[in-house]
Length: 76
Image: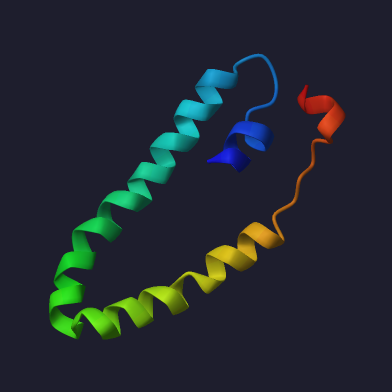
């Protein structure tokens, strides 16, 4: 969310870019939350928790290596 607000919405129409990125984020959020309850029931909570912990690794790596094309001076 912070990456979207700082890096993806440059230019004149900040709110439009932010709304578009938020919509894309929610398109990904809805199916994952819809499936997670069924998956937790199927795997059991401990196994589901372990799978979720391993599934977060790619997100952390993507956040770590995400490019920041705009400098801090441009953001102010």
